[in-house]
Image (cartoon, rainbow, N blue to C red):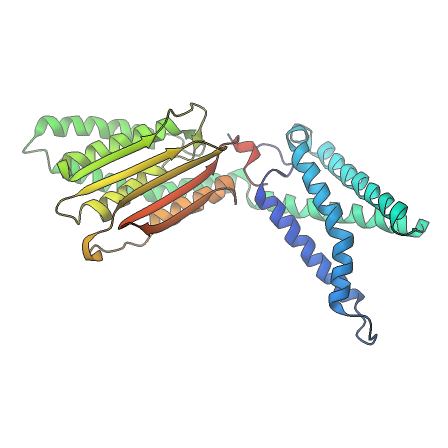
Amino acid sequence: MRKSSRIPNFRNLGIHLRVLLLHVGLLLLLALFNWQPALANNTLWADITGFGLCLLPPLLLVLGMLTLCYPWLSRWPYRSGMAAIIGLALLLTLAITAIYQQFIAALTPLNWVQVTLVCMGDSVLSLYYLDLLQRAYSPAIAEARLQALQARIRPHFLFNSLNAVLSLIRSQPQRAETALEDMAELFRVLMADNRDLVPLAQEMALCQQYLSIEKLRLDARLQCDWQHAAIPPDIMIPPLILQPLLENAVYHGIEPRAQGGVITIEIDTSDKRLLLRISNPLPPNNDKPGGNKMALKNIRERLRLHYDLEAQLLQYQADQRYVVEITIPTRPLSEVMHG
């Protein structure tokens, strides 16, 4: 599931935003270089507007075309792909320049040479920047960070699970044995290579095993409401995304309440997006410590490593409940991962 091509992923929103910001910076530099304060009719804003009208339309057209062509370009060797991208950018820019000359104003041969050189220089600079960006997020670095981030979750899960089993050993040894068998299966999954995405159904099974252990400890105080349609088998998510949220829901929303409560897990896979929503009752008088938000920070960081800007995590309160929402694209990872 890792992205192997070095060609920038032009279907990723983060790539588009970074390229646009890079060009806004270049536009400002060009305007400052061209600005002549001594001339009364020469204003900085006029220069910015003029350069923007010249640079942004070709840029947006090129980005749109690269977005459409990315599945095809991603299969090319790196150098051939880079040459194709530069050639496509040059072709589209010259086409727009020809339309400008035909309908707006005549251009000299020197103008055509300038447009060609600026387009090629701009393309090379942008691609070099994106290559540096990908090197910063190289698989080795990202995988090492993912492993370190996930290692922070496991001690908390182990601590809570062992407490649940210890509470049953003397009073209900048979149930404690069943819980230990569940734990063995859970940790078999946790000890696997968790750098890649996993099927959503596998993550749900992991969560159900965790909740069954917690239910042994909390009994009727813990109720869970799963709301989802049939789960497509090809829906993949980063591992250990739901379980830490359920752990937080149990600790902050169920344990402080004498009567317990209901944890609601909603899963929606429509519109090429996966929506995961977990909600739990607010603790009475907020007397439970709020924690250090490590799980949420951890999940947000792993979503960023996997999906860049295309995944979203929201947290809010509504109807006396605490809600966490995660939105993930369901396209193949190779089409959403940054770089």
